[in-house]
Structures are given as C-alpha cells and as structure tokens.
Amino acid sequence: MELTELVGRCLEGDKLAWEVLVRNYQSRIYGFAYGYVGNADEARDLAQDIFIRIYQKLGTCRDPERFLPWTIRIARNVCVDHLRRRKVRPAAHDTPVDEMFDLASDGPDPEERFTAESRKQLIHQGLQELSRINREVILLKDIQDLKLTEVASVLKVPVGTIKSRLNRARIELARAVLALSSRPDSETP
Image (cartoon, rainbow, N blue to C red; front, side):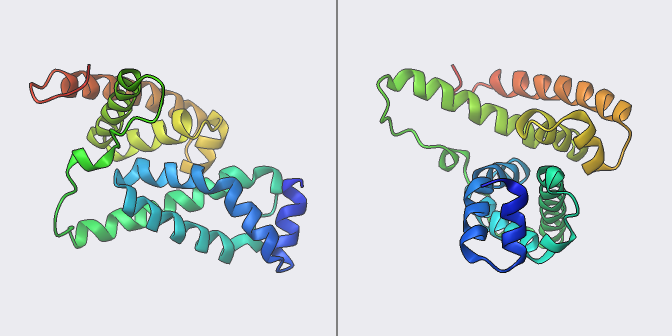
C-alpha cells in the first residue's frame, strides 16, 4: 500500500492502516528518540509519545510525499520538549552504560558481534558528548539519512548552515569518540 493511501486511510479512522503506518516507522522513530536520550526505556516511552502526537496531527500533513521529514520534525519537537522537562526535573539516577547494550551472542562469531556493539556504543556515548545542535544534525543527516534540504527544513535553517554544522558536528563527534576510546576504562577494541 502506498504511503499516500495509507495516510488517507488513517485519516478516515482505519485502525489497521494506522497499525501498518506505526509498524513501518516504529524502529526509525525509536532510533531517533534513542539518539536524543541514550536510554532504551526512555526512548521507548518517547516513541509512544511521538506516535500519539503524529496521530493527533496527521490531518496537518499536507503532502504525504514529505511524510518522513514531517514525522521527524514532530519527533524532534517531542524529544526536545522531553529534554527540557528532564533538565527541570533531573532523573533520580543515571543508567549505567553497561545496561545499554546486550553482550549475549546469538551470532556465529561472538567476538565480531562484541566489537560491532562496542563501536556502536562508543558512537552513542560520543553523541551524548556533542552539543545539542551538533547531535541533532548528526542524528537527522547521518543516522536518519535525511537529505540536506530535509534537515534544513526540520531545523528551519538554510542548507548552507546545515552543511557547515554537519562538518563541525562530524569533527566534534570524531574527537569525542577518540577521547572516549583513549580512556583507560574503555572496553572498545
């Protein structure tokens, strides 16, 4: 089913169409939220909030061809609002980094899986070290794979600004990852 038809059916109240839409985008929305908060449980809760907001605002999506950037803009707003609330009311405790990835090996080569997971974790830790704007640009362009024009639309800044911010963000991320990997307590191979 095409996205235009799917959105139309959702607007008509078709629950099955809504379920298909959620299934199609749930991992992308979860990954986006995880990039902002760095915590799996919190990201799941945020993803639910994002889908509630998408459902409430579905009628305002004028162009189904631009559904993904429209969805990402909503997701970004929900995540930013959440982070603002969290600053006002800090969490009771921090989640240890060890709980953020699974070391269980169900693949054929446990060492390769551990290496890949460790590197992924290092990138997530590095993302948390970035400034908010640099983290957003990396999440939107490199992780969500949006086009530069779509990133500019979501952040409401010119494309040239996005290009320069993206370059600075990648440099800042590289420095953060290098700093994290050179720590004596780092487990990254």
